Length: 114
Image (cartoon, rainbow, N blue to C red):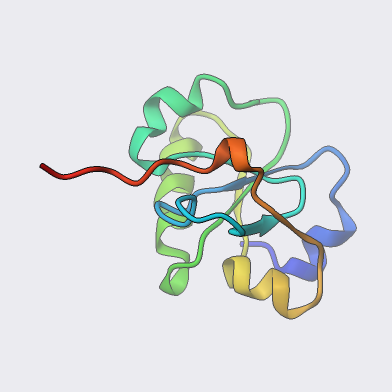
């Protein structure tokens, strides 16, 4: 685990990934500035494009960072240097660190049910 204040001091060289399984369906959705989404439901495929040579920090909005912790356990077994942001996205925002709107081209269409 790493706290938001700690992470803000060591951002150089660290990759931050948003592993929320939801949240990319509405315009105006916010994320940590400079972070990239990783779909936890497609983790096997996603890991193929992630760097093993840089520290990775994961965040979500789950209670006790459950999604981030699960993804981190899987990635750790594959040799990634992975950390979980304690308190997730809420902790980052609470201390006033930079956030950004998710670009429109990254907004996902809502699934359609027949």
